[in-house]
Amino acid sequence: MRLDRRRFLAAGAGVLAMAADDSVFRWQRFDVVVANGRVIDPETRLDAVRHVGITGGRITAVSRAPLRGAQVVDAGGLVVAPGFIDCHAHGQDLENNRVQALDGVTTTLELETGPVDVEAWYAERAGARLLNYGCSVGHIAARNEVMAGRSTTGFNGGLDQPAARRAATPEQIEAIAELVDRGLRHGALSVGFGIQYVPGSSRTELMTMFRVAAKHDVMCGLHQRYGGVLEPDGLAGIQELLAMALVTGARLHVEHITSNTGPLVRQALDMLEAARARGVRVTTDTHPYTAAMTGIESAVFDEGWRDRFRIDYGDLQWAATGERLTAESFARYRAQGGAVVIHLMRPEDVAAAVAHPLAAIISDGELTGGRGHPRSAGSFSRVLGRFVRDEKVLTLPEAIRKMTWYPTLIVGGRALAAKGRVQVGKDADLTIFDPARVIDRATYEAPAQPSEGIRHVLVGGRFVVRDGTLQDELAGRPVRRAGPAL
Image 1 (cartoon, rainbow, N blue to C red):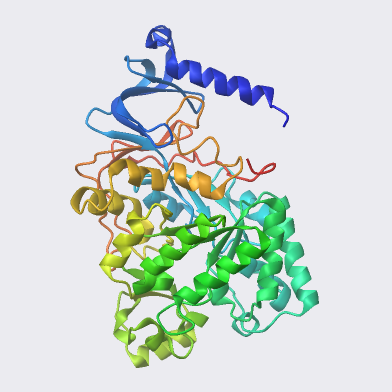
Image 2 (image 1 turned 180 degrees about the vertical axis):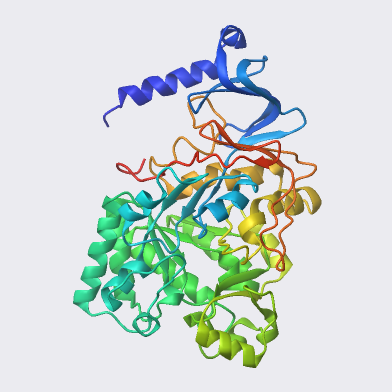
């Protein structure tokens, strides 16, 4: 294996800087110093009071001794963590960036229902986002372009419902695969799938896309085909995904495992553990809420949904108004189309997924005009405040691992290699919060309420949140795949 000399020297310098006597920093002046904070680095398991020096957007010192800087932030009594990485964020505009930043997020990735034109997606955001951004190439978008003559936008916006239910011909499958391959060559981080939204997708079609992903050694992020408790149930959905990963060798990431498996989530997690033990590269994620959200016009609500998910009309909440639905309003809104909140999960099932070592923390969120699901604004603070501090479902270092370093391993490759850690040489994406006060404030009635206790957030060494106040600093940079996976 050829050794990259520059990477070797940079890594060696980082090790020396961490290990050397802190007096080497005595005469150095940093751009920014984060002083006196409890630094938690998930990879090295550092958990101690340190001083962090930042120069040129990178961490250049993690010191026991005080440092000098052009800007100094006293983080005494606060936790200094890597910036949170949301691998499943549909909200990719400034409205969403603002609440995401106040929730401690520094990188937002749309890895479930990505675009087909990856180049255009990145170009649209260049220099115009608070937070780092990246995407998958979307199977749904590519399929809709081939089957209906147009791609989707946002979270399945513009999805042709008849085409979504129609099987693709061999020629169409080949055309979809070519679009997916092109997206990966243009820098997409992964291949995103929402099989439940395109029920016409055959296993042959999906296996073809898995093979494209395997060729590029990128993950397949999957919203599974089946959910609920009636056969074929949520476990059948997991089985289908595991079979495709096993046969093709592609890396599999099961999206929002609680939303699709509900009361079967522990069995589903056991299945993923067993598959990993047998060599299948599989991971998962979850948001920390008992309600999901999706389009009411989608195949999720095809006939039989009430029995499948063991819910009724009153368990649905129209996102635009917050009203609970009836049979009459359900029919009206389904004909119209739009986002609906679905109250269908038990708290104990959500807690089990949040605590599981295979599950990353994500939001799966998107706000439009201040309306949507509270997970868009509160997911990460909710885990820190409710599941760590109040309910002690998991430890603080483990929660930080699930929000930072672990997502970089899930995505893989070089794109996130400089993120998710508080180490010399890594990007200065940092979230600094008060562990005694951090909490979500967003509710289903007021889903855009920002979280509390996130004191400072830096993206590439620039403050996007300072002293709890949003700075509107357009510091976000693209996260793109380049070169083979590590």
